[in-house]
Image (cartoon, rainbow, N blue to C red; front, side):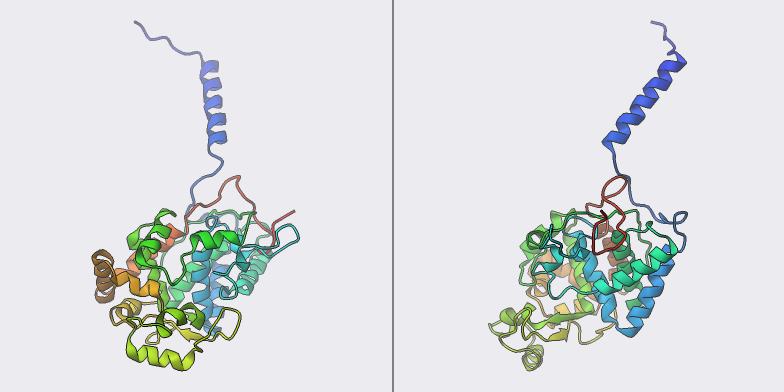
Length: 331
């Protein structure tokens, strides 16, 4: 049978129909490197400048940004929902949930970055991208440049935040390995991502209440010397919001993002049950050894895992909004 040529106006109509259907079916598009190249060329430089100053004043500011990215992305996706303040219409947002309150910090630093970006490019850069850029820059600065990667952007900000959600998706530091793996798998991450991202525990401080009951008040496999030191720092009745001092998570290289964490896991000088749990399976124990012993191995994997985590359930395109203030949705 001979082929019948379609008339030009029919082809145009079909093309327009496909375009319309495609737009309706795909209200978002992938994140991309250099998303703000034309919209706000100085965006990433502004974030980096604020982060460099903040970390020079207190390295803990960098640790706070890396932790904030994790707590944001695992709940409602990477959409800055963790930044929203309570309002009469939403009195209990994520930041008031026990996994975040009172230990999650860095909100004022995000405000400072947002204020600087609103001066440079009003209404352009999302708070979700600010969190991702800040965590990327913190990783680079605290690792002395050994963790250095590009962060895709184009995220938009969410409008929903509820304190019940972090309890569902953020595994507590008392978790065993199977619970930790499950919490990562449900977010599209795998066992290796869990082991690699746990390496961020090489920086920052922890509240005593996060580990006292597991490691100091009951028998545990924690190194005896570390246990004795911690008993001198932490009250036996440490509770969140009460008498709850903080201690360094890594006393060897406390302000440096490096592979020391894995050496600490091997020597049983880590604070959390969730850290020690990495040695409870042959697969994860092998990963711990590789990260501890092979120079550059962990840093390369951490870069990839951070980008992967920062892509969890993102809102793009016509989803969400670009908040004017990171603590409140636009009205």
